[in-house]
Length: 385
Ligand code: SOE
Image (cartoon, rainbow, N blue to C red; front, side, top):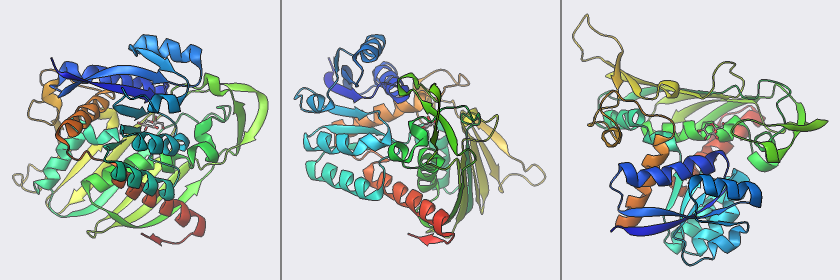
């Protein structure tokens, strides 16, 4: 029998469900070195927490996160909380010697991120930051093709992360729309994913020019107990101020000479969770769209003359990263699968004492770029990192 590894999860909403599913599925589809045990689910409201725990098969519940962290039988702390709560929980978890699986964005600022990284390093725990999109087979394939030199030297990165869940002005002022809980709007929530992908696929960003926009300045106060996965309910007619941006655009320079653009918004009417990137190189190009996440488009200069054009690779074959563990070729996978891949790689990293990426060091670099973006939007000037 495989050894067991005990998980304690803090947070039980959207990401709590996505992570729970991943812990459960990982050993069923992959030969994980250990079997994750869904040991304790932690949250503030006992009634909804118990319901969550029962649905997902968590053995126990706990309403005090510090008590959870101090339990000697817990090996991994899974932080599935909003970003304003990551710092405190991660520091305590690392000091207690627990490995950390942390939802993005890493923290509220780079000072917190640097300390989170330092404390994890000092305590020798694994620290994984869940930028899950790296682990879709098509994105992992893009990385492999870039490393193999398929598109040559990269000139351009063009990325847009578009959602529309707050276009309606009556959508309430949920925690994502307040600076004290979210730090920023799409710059933090969406561009964190986009910058992670850019760092992963193109390289480090060295300068940022940015602008932000706020289209709706006041919204009805939210009933936070009724806030769900990108949905919300208001308490009544009382209005509150939106203190984060609604859209964030960045232009960047990469260390390797490439240039790039990012567009992140929650006001792209009709776009639900569309994350697209285009990478143009000296020998070819790659294009990805999360809403068609099993596909990767590839253009190669090396194709026969007269037959050039973008071709669509369906990244579902057993030779594609992660794909062979699921279904036969052509039997597509979805949003939740990348979370499973992250759990599998995390368990491997713990077992073999190897690095797992992205980690808090990568998270710190991402936060530094995002902060530079906010500074640039405020000053109107380019910010160098
Ligand atoms: C909300 O904008 C959100 O849930 C992000 O926070 C996630 O990271 C992303 O995967 C989907 O959209």
